[in-house]
Image (cartoon, rainbow, N blue to C red):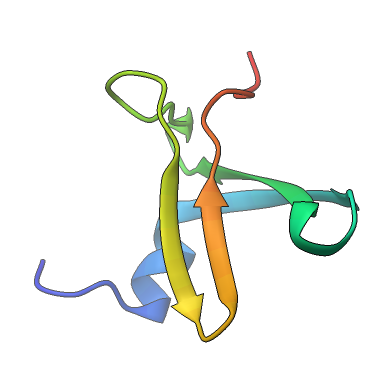
Amino acid sequence: MDCLTSPLLQELIDHIDVYETEGTGKNRTQRIVIYYRFVGYIELPGPRSNYKADTRKGVAVEYLTDNIPA
């Protein structure tokens, strides 16, 4: 597989749970859990660390792995 396309994502993802936004301003957080078909929820490998990406000017997305559902 060379690239991840929209039809491929539709085949791989079962459903996505999106929770209410918490906090205000720069301290806002929103929990999103992705469930994959035939697998369920996948815990990120490695030590518990956060992943941060600048998605566009003035907006940073941080993936928190500390509060993973059981």
